[in-house]
Length: 457
Image (cartoon, rainbow, N blue to C red; front, side, top):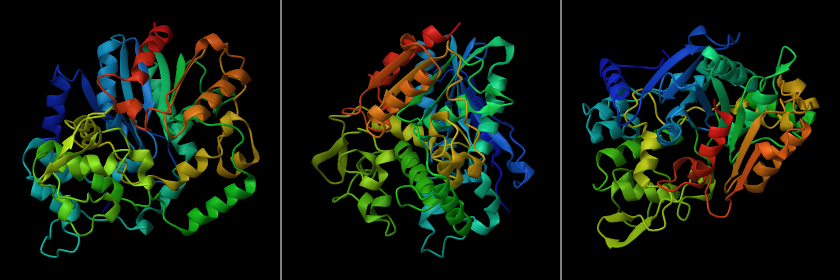
């Protein structure tokens, strides 16, 4: 039987504690009714929202995670935002694929009722060890064939329900996203909702090292991608790591960083850890995690998961982590991906739908193109956005100038004045994830706060 947002009594108690914690701000999470996709079992037609900040704030920033990411990824950033922009609440979207995840033991570890060894054994250590009988169960692809339909249409319709709820009571709403979440932001803004663009009624758009330029892929390429999807897995392999292992590696690694940062790394001796994630010397848990995801030592295939975290200490047994040169504190990065204090959530999407990524290539800057008809993508109002819309685009190492150029083109198509754009390119100094994780200094946040002040009530 497939899991459906497993929440134990411990999880519920922990969530209530988080919601009441003044140090974290008002924090809550709930699943709500999503788009009714005819191919999907009704229990998965849901979309989640992680809300951080004052419930009665007059403005809401809705953030969409990127490829293989989820709502908790934005939690530390959201707390930073609401402390500095007190009239804003942040809503981070949890996509429906995360209903398939099993957080049962991860939640116990967060609550202190499962040991680090139990956490490791349940999700990873059981592989190759038949003595561990109670463990995570992998979902066969044939049991989730319906997820091959979880593309841009399903995503945008789910997001539309979130945005409509955010706008209740006359609140102003800005929609944004990181990486693929930027493409989703363009798709939503330009989507045809009964002849009106999704941006109608929005105060602004935020693109964090992601977006959509024009043109998209060809009709032939779209058909070919659909055929490959029909013959393969519903899920994307992230950096060459098949689903759900990227998520399992990250939730176990990140939680262990929070639970036992200075202990010898459990994953370091695990025989199934990919060689390119294994440090050359024995390390602490924190150092092993930092080594796997820092820009200097992480494998090239994981460039979309990297940040400037620091480096290994030059000596020691096991080696500890040296924070010299960091933009992002490694403990903050672990908070993002562990979903610290957030039961049932973590920062990685263990199962990312290939269809969503395929469809993203057809958005084409919100301009009608032949591939959109093949994929049922309705991002056609690229030249029809409200002229009062504000746009903030921040380019980092993966998107860089392309993100800036796509934002400028989107504005130019709809005759949005240049003065309503905030364009920042930090491709030479910020990795793909640093805009969301760098602290205490953060160039993305530095420009975001005045942008929100201008967009808000």
